[in-house]
Amino acid sequence: MRRAAGVLWTFAAGTCTMTEKGRAMTKNPKRAEVARLAGVSESTVSRSLNDSPHISPVSKKKVRDAAKSLGYIPSRQAALFAWNRTFTLGFVVPSYASFPPFSRAYFPALLDGAVLGAKQLGFTIAIVLDQMDTETRDYSALIRSRTFDGLLFAVTKADYTPFHKLKKNKIPFVMVNNYCEGLDSVDARPEPGMRKAFAHAAFMGHSHVGYVTGDMVYRNAIDRLDVFTRLACEFGMKTDIAQGDFSKTSGYRETGRLMEGKNPPTLIMTSSDREALGVLQYCSERGLHVPRDLSVIGYDNLHPAQDVTPALSTVDNPVSRTGWDAAQLLIGIVNGYVTEPVQHWLDTDFVARGSTASASPRSAR
Image (cartoon, rainbow, N blue to C red; front, side, top):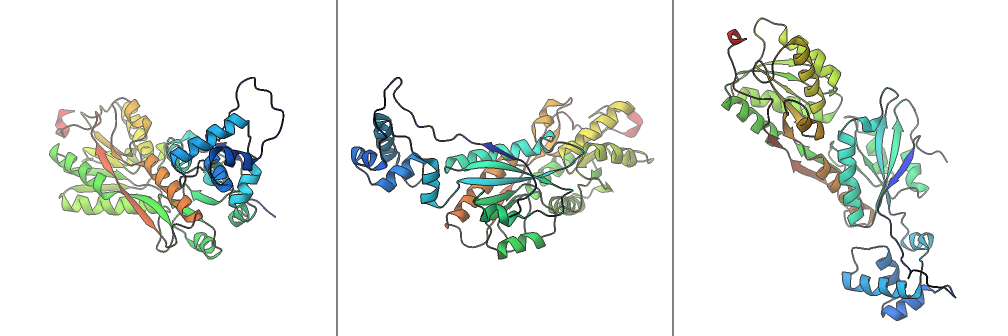
């Protein structure tokens, strides 16, 4: 049976069975003995030691105290067999030969949320590095082989044929920061945060705004451009739009195109913080002062946004929360609590920092 090409890393705080330090064990206690000592059923022993959310904290404590007293060490394989679960979710991350996937701040932030959301419900997360130059990726095999109970897809294009096939094969999965009718997903609406960004720009006197798009094969890039266009019209702003791909390189390159005209914009918005970092680099190399000569607004509010100089004004995308909610939704699907397709939506916000200021006349340069 083929497995999806990739590497697995496991991230979780696993169950730790404690015994009294230095105590000599003279026998191998059984689950039934723990159940008798704790005054519960054998199934409650298994569920308590696997930190099931369906067992009360009081019962869990009784079971753990009894297990510690007897020196009982549960068999994880037996527990998994009893539950018919691996208690592991696959976190599918695209991997490119040109750069490591976790060199970008988005994936660690998303993973943080997913790990914590899964841990709360007794599951672990394992990373599947999806080699993008590999033609065959049999995700169904990962479920059928009991490697994972379900899959979280961190970055996916607006091509949903493979996901409809997974759904047809009854493979539990959730798309993150993507969505399609009839498929389970968790995403954040761009309009709330971008609306606040436009209101901030208008308050600062900006009437001519440039925009660097994301990669238009992704739903997020399409939606953010659509919202930008509608809000610019609503706020009565002139716009120049350049096509990027979410990367710092494209932010740098497209800023050059936006600024080369006789009447360049006084503010540039981007579809990602990485693109905004490219804008800042371009300005630094060309002797343009941010925000006096050009204001900049990014999108995501990941850690680099507050660490650069000037600190980046940006749309606050709840990436970690998205990971948390996606993991919990997937666990609900795996456990049979969620039976109908869910599109779960979060809202974006806006954070004003040092990269935006009042629009200045071009003659002031």
